[in-house]
Length: 282
Image (cartoon, rainbow, N blue to C red; front, side, top):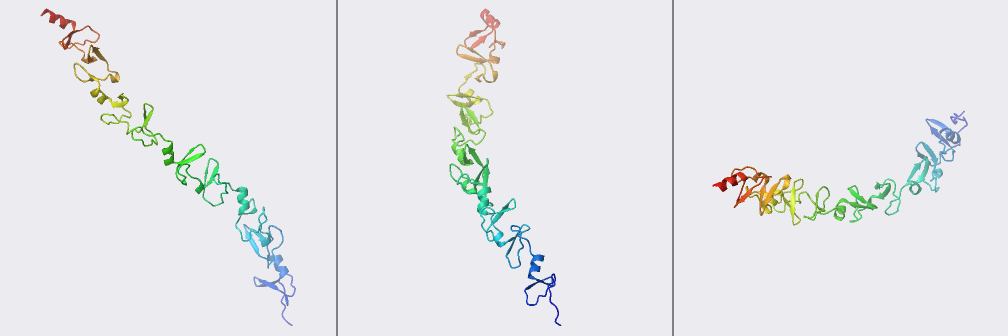
């Protein structure tokens, strides 16, 4: 009597029938499918041994069941994604969930380089400077209303220019006569000392440090011959065409202060009452 050759599950003879060997045990086709086949996540039927099976995130599908949830396109050999467990082809996913570039109005495809700013999205190559039209990319930029500028173009177009050197002031600077200056450009007209943060004055709209202004334009004290500027709260005395620093306004004879007192001019000298009286009695 010949040895039996039966299905390991239903025990029916496999002679003259197709079978599948699994773990050294033979199974008839119906038993093998019922024991080892996966269930299609879409149609809920078994995926037979002779069917092409597709697998995605612990889910199994017949080839013909692996389709886009929106347009029903086969995804067997197409790129796809999943949204709330629904399978979507790239076109449907982009139309429904991807943002559009505000410059070209085309979809920004997943995985492509993009730039987002103030709630809007651009393709990287579409986010360009409004002036030079070059892509800004990861460089710094300055928004102006609905336009965007690279820093160089913005400074060239909008930043104030130094009155002296005509170059842009990107930050800082000083204002003189409602005009902008670089700090290093705002200097004394005579000695070119920087005036930013210093006391200065002007003549004919030109700025001067106090020292140069005194030497060039201020009247000289009759006593010490130094300039009388009046800056810093300094007071002075003026008589006819002569001037004195207040501390220098003293009697030429006895050096007593004549500020607020009577005095007598005698040639190039000024005398107090006592010295003038003594002079008269001689």
